[in-house]
Image (cartoon, rainbow, N blue to C red; front, top):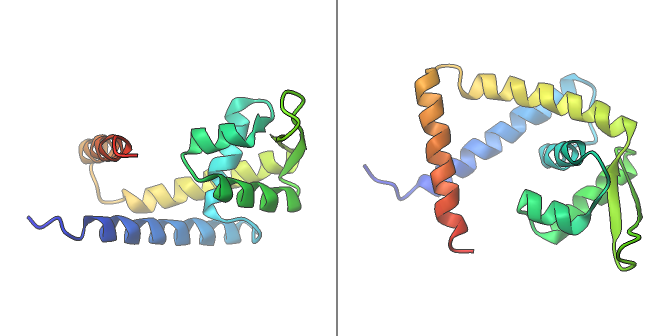
Length: 145
């Protein structure tokens, strides 16, 4: 089998998955959020307290510029708040607002709908094998960064 287009195929899957999430959010009346915001909201919820941007960068494995752009957009929409970091005057903490908690539930519904479509014709065993393979692929690439 030829694997030369594997990255392109993964990219196409991601683009389509994001489109489905966006459509699902629009069906719920959410038009000011994008799929990448969901991971930020989820992490803030799981943390249970405001987080420094550097923690989001590490946890989400994304560039600082991407996290800053996302948190700025989320703050503008009222989904997160920012406050000075008492432990580091050069940074700030980002926390989830009540509106952010509502948006997170909407994201969860959108992700569930997308995953049902993504895995609709794939058996449970093959889904599990797929997830294991994706874990291995991610681990393989993490060694090089």
